[in-house]
Length: 167
Image (cartoon, rainbow, N blue to C red):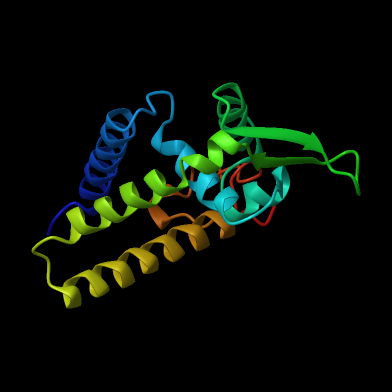
């Protein structure tokens, strides 16, 4: 049986390398694949609260803050206090950020067509279902604090900083 964790890890690394190469080739050397989820959300809105952005992309708020700061520094995004709630910060794309939307879409389409090349659609559907099931199993295990019997002596995992945790 193949080692799923290894295959997932290596595939993710290659996806990130592919995206980084395409971004640099198109003149966006400062952007990283980790900015992709944020850019995708902002392309479809006039602005998002940081807390909502964090929830939508399932990333820790501190991670989103760091990624948004980099986008602001590069001139692709801007932040402002929410007019309705001055405690909240809203992030939106600048004109420069909106200008990269076409390239962003093209890169995403190129990635999808590259990774499915030569793979039967039935196999792709099955792979997506299997990975979704694995993700659900892991999330449930983390949230419930469950451990295998052989790990009885090990302390439970602190899930307080994990996205999707119930604690």
